[in-house]
Length: 288
Image (cartoon, rainbow, N blue to C red):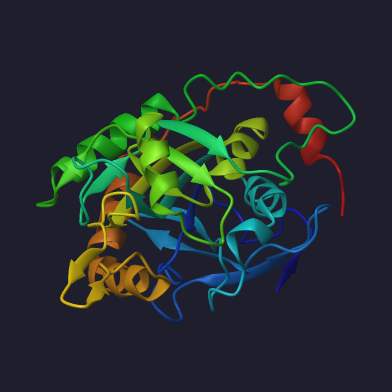
């Protein structure tokens, strides 16, 4: 069904944004699906609203259900406006990331706490006709991060409770030189989608927490090409196929972790006000 803002049954206070490999959250037939019209165009996918861990949850997959939306083409403004129009105040996002640092090896779960934005040309604010300076020193909500840290502590998985993610433009992966440079700049993981998703959520008064899964060692930590006989043997660099294969293997654990985070979000959770509430309301009041 189509929703132009809230309609009966289309309400949820918690949202989940699925990254690469996470295209369904609810069992077939257990959720309602909505095409939410927004002033910013179409969302990446229809929004499913169902029950997870006893809570009403709105789910959207940022790359589309067939992974048809490239990182630089994601309509983050539409995605976040649609979720907020349905009542969402807390977003749990999943991300596939590369590991830039030896301590962030493939298979590690990371509760990201910092970002370095290396993207360009993306629609990265709702406030195009007025000045609103987003307070963004700590991008992710501390209450939600505490919930996530407790949740993954219960899982028997390698984990890091902090991590700086470098967000690159994509859709190509990094060169070896770029990976080394970004690691030296302080990056622990690398991704193509966390910005402008996280700051846009903050502009609408939505708190976010990110659970990243390290799928690969990126290019910088992969072994250098080595001489073998008369030829050159090259190490296997990160590929999309490799990422998707590892995400498929970890899917059940990722979903279980998201469910544990959702269950732990306080009933009275209130996001931080990083821009004036009236400014956020003025964006939400715009009709398609």
